[in-house]
Image (cartoon, rainbow, N blue to C red):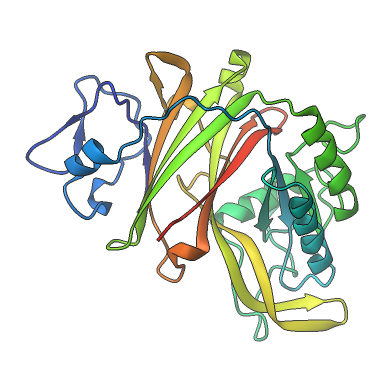
Length: 314
């Protein structure tokens, strides 16, 4: 199961008869937090490993490059290389998500993402096809490869010009890093349990600009860091191409995330929201090849305010 709950540390009471979480005052619950994924008594986990976040001292706004790609897209490898170059040139400030989706309003994929006898890995999934369908309606997503940079407009005169070619990702990234307009901060803690091949993920959303509270949602990509499979490249095929940072799922199974009504507010820190997730990893993805990418975005403009990545530690 891939489930989420928002739990306030101030109202949590653990039942002594079972591994369920009970509340004297019931908060808003999106789904059940799966306490059975912890290999032992959940009371032990809560008492010893549940995070108490310290002050978030980060002052930098990070950039998310969403690279819309496909394993049968012959021009996509150079775009992937450009995203990696941008990240390498801005260490610690750029996160890459490879999204195998196409500009089709009905299916969310095109021929570039489809499988056949030579390209057997199904890189697309229920989450990313929703992006393909949504962004095909405007936003200048005209084909692969295309990408977004914090989903900010590439054309100052067109608020929906969120997609561009790899050639202009670098300048957009540099502009955002130079401006460094941090309006929402994030910090996380991830605990992995090898016995159940599952994780608990805790995310603190610190809203530095209170005017944004009603306008934002939180998304958590579950990402496979590397996968070796064929890739079309210009007039040939690379048999052992290293696909990277593949978006395989979203922790809450909500492609466009959840708003802050899914979180609990720390009474002593009213602009900080605590979100807690449980997630069972796919059997074919090892812990050392997985990570979570978390970001907060504006539901009207779609702009991503901040992003962090958290690796799964076996």
